[in-house]
Length: 370
Ligand SMILES: *Cc1c(COP(=O)(O)O)cnc(C)c1O
Image: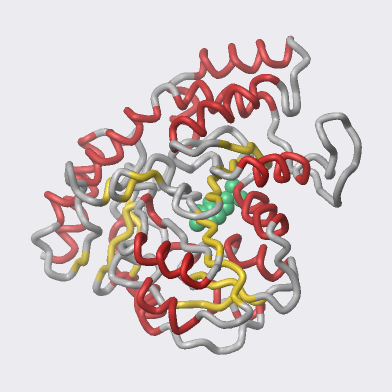
């Protein structure tokens, strides 16, 4: 059967506004602005304003953002960083790249870091905690995590790659700790046509340092003042992202609408566990980067969807970071994480989906269980 609902439709997203994108490319290139141009400064100001943070520092991608934050904090050999295994390998590889040790804690029912498990994972060597605000939802108990980190003098760096615009008690993802990192990878809620990312922070001195590290350790005068690297944002991506920021609220609204349709359509099926639905005036304002469900007979359901033209995905190929044998991570006990990976399935969710497509997905999934 032909594909009726793609898991993500890259060409459709481009074509929806291709005149605007091509105009931006032409204008930016004609100006001779390629890397860290005025477009990047403008995007940094706009993105900071969206999150409510004092500063945004544009970088090459979110992985770099996380690496730069840890590096700026002086993280290295002997240091421990607490995070989760239910995440993209990026969150953990940056810890290992600096010679530090990842310490995993299990997840809670919201598929995010179980904040109650963090205290037991803290040690003398803990330098930072990286909660991952996955699927467009901030950890439950984020305020408890902030309190605990402050008590223990440990920094929080949020991996907010999937949570542009998500809020908890009115506060935006990325602004709970010392810094928060975002991804503008094409499939992300605010995506460009290539790699890009940003770090937000209220600390001006940290922002200055990150701006130097991303540009070979050079000061604004071009003097090399510390060891850095190259993680600069291209001007054209900044210009496209500024344009897309102009309608990001509508993007989020549409994502929440689709999540609502899934919730209404699927909540009667006892074989499924759904994410919390979008609710107004709740502590959580979720942006639904993904719609990750827990499904009984997941693999059969997935095959049935495929046969009926619906593409689905397993998060990160179906394994937690600690389950990739090649990475040689010593055995850790993460029962809830491992249990989730046996059932987790991601349904298509992006603003270009029509209501009819979402209803078709609901129909196929319902048919499978009936
Ligand atoms: C996408 C993603 C990243 C990596 O972002 P890049 O911009 O591709 O480097 C990191 N963490 C999470 C949770 C992600 O979803």
